[in-house]
Picture 1 (cartoon, rainbow, N blue to C red):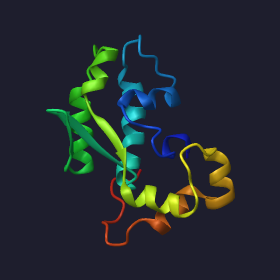
Picture 2 (spheres, rainbow, N blue to C red):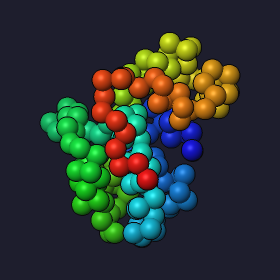
Picture 3 (cartoon, rainbow, N blue to C red):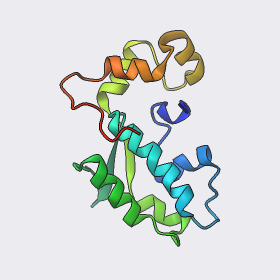
Length: 144
């Protein structure tokens, strides 16, 4: 698991995922590269770490779609000829409140070193997420 993307506030826009997959904003967005990013987003949506939103009239409107529908919408918005500036108005990501609250309860601070925090306070992040996710939520879907 790449833990950098799980650090709260590390992801706001779609291009924040690009560095993890060696995607350059001045190159064509190939289907293979898009699949890698969308697969990671799907994982994080399924684990209820992230949510998606869009900006309308200077307000952020949280998407209330299934994971499959959210990914379909992202696929349709992100074209091969998408320009870098288009990403600013495409979609916004946020971290779920339960996730941030649980990390804060362990002493996480935004300026803290994420990897040290994981090693000292969490250990296996996937296991920690599964153990700490709100129990009333649906089971993980679309796991591959």
